[in-house]
Length: 87
Length: 281
Image (cartoon, rainbow over the protein chains, first blue to last red):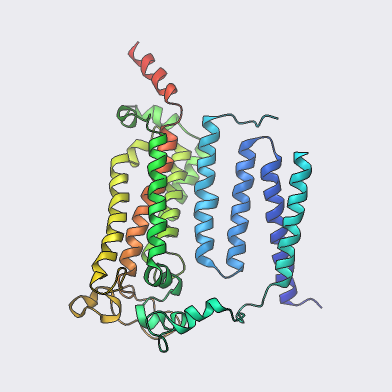
């Protein structure tokens, strides 16, 4: 019989794995716009992780700056330069 | 080679995170460390006023983190605000090719409507922009009661600005984001924060002179005693903390907004020069 705590623990570990996978996607792809979106997803999951770790104010800062503003700045910078990464 | 190094480092990071997730100490039963003495023994009073337990009675703020950041450790926040100010100054210096004429470029309404992303994105932006704005202002205003504060709320408001700027493109930006007004808001936020710190100079720098009726004629402003209970939620508590939250919030939202604005309008100045020359012909 699996209790609530086990489900919460499995969810927490799945969250950490998703953070690492999205972080790997952010450096793996050649299309920089995709990388910016992957980094935004990672920031969003990271803010969820901060919320799980009972730091809601850090979670708000991470969601606002990491997922919102940084993605916007990346998108503006990609518009001004090249979209594809060179080898 | 690069892929192998990246894969190995990510596997190490994954193992590290999983180890921490498994070995994490249970919440609510913290280990005792030397650092805890600073908080438990207190800063103002050695025995009676503990920072974690007594911050609510001492400063009147319901959110102990904000009480620490703006009251007990105000110098740290001053340093953070100054770092942000110099970062904004650096971005403004880098993108200084942005000339005065570019900001107030005259365009027709039809051209403004065609600029930017698709109609779907614009509609979603119209729906979400006021909600994000209200949430950010709520976080700034209730910084001493609920999680968050001036820095977080300012970042949320600035992300709403960035959303509109990305969705509508650079032609609509000068209509609602003005460079001069934003820099006035940013500078007055920083000056107001330092001024509030100087106002407590009769005792010490960053003294919370309004907290819990310390200045009797002014204590109705925000120095009333918080109500008893798990969530008092009275807005006029916390001494100078709400005003410092407002000042830092103004500085952060204008500073981060200026960064997005400068990057968006200062992007590709040659494009603007070509457009102007075509208009002259």
